[in-house]
Amino acid sequence: MKKVLIFYGSYGGGHLSAARNIKEYIDSQYKGEAETLLVDCIEYINKPLNKVSTKAYAKISKSGHWAWKKMYYSKESSALSKFSRAANRAMSIKLNILFQEYKPDIVISTHYFSSHMCTILKKKKKIDCKLATVMTDYAPHPQWIRNHEHVNWFFVAHEGMMDSLIAHNISPEKVYVTGIPLSNRFLANYDKEKVLTEFGLEMNKTTILFFAGGEYGFGKSKTYNFLRSILDDYPDMQVIAIAGKSAKAKEKFENIVEETRSSKNAKILSYTNKIPELMSVSDLVISKPGGLTTTESIASGLPMIAVNPIPGHEQENAEYLERNDIGIWIRKDDDVREKLQDILGSSEKIKKMKINARLVAKRNSTNDICKIVLES
Image (cartoon, rainbow, N blue to C red; front, side, top):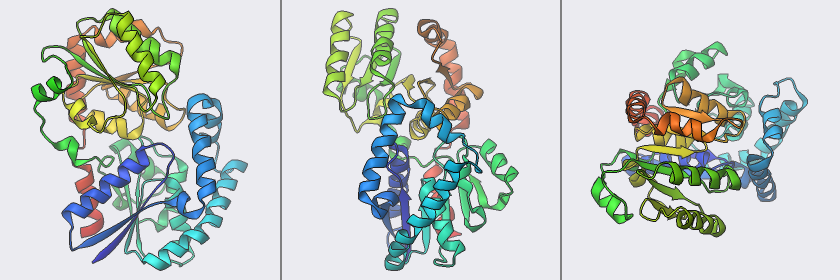
């Protein structure tokens, strides 16, 4: 039986979701052939460090975009990059304890910290297992490909990323354009009428799924203004607004619905585990363009309006959406109403973007990744 160690990081939900999707697929489809262990790499190494660093990431994601941009685009020769490499070398010593205890045959990393630490250990001949790196955004960052000669497989979201990795002297035989790992729930067929009825919505209206809350949301005032603009200007559409775990945000949303007299056209939810079902009945998504949300939207054939992306990876995700005509990015200085009209005012444009999303979607990503690492 093959032992598979799956690493993720707690910086945003996408890395964990991708790792869980892989674990769930292996556990269900390779029973008796493989066992899995899911580990937060930084949490394992140092819990206080993980707590501090995840809080710092949350703060930067909300209000420190300038700082993140500086870190993200720092050169590999910069002091910050040198510090990162040194820190990963030091932390790999502790990570090696887990390797010696679990003795995995295969390691799958959905975060570049663990990917880099694993290559350090392999370079030092501390481990000899196969390594897989699963990139969870739509553009590669240098940290993903450090010590790339020690990685057996790279899994990327689209063909352009493969070209980029090859340009960095990575063998094309190592790179697979599988897409980002999806939950099998996004492949299921749902009864549209049943789902809409469950949430008190109508069959014959354009439905907008609005991700507004969450730990890394896109700002209170901007969130509220977006919702108000949609409810004011598009009374013939209906909105499912996800407020996240914030009771204050949910209350504010409900107040906006009351003020705009939109109770028949809006459903306000807190946290929900029914995103696949909600995407299956929606026509368009409004959200920050995180890697997993972007992937889930595309797999569901939904155009996306990207709002307030974090500089670097999320901005590159937004650029991918625009480049492939499957979404728009509303930038800081854009006229929100004008940009919304550009897409919401044209049913033909939405239809075209839906087709484009289906054309680039890689719905079998998780199956393809697991098949390659377990059957090669």
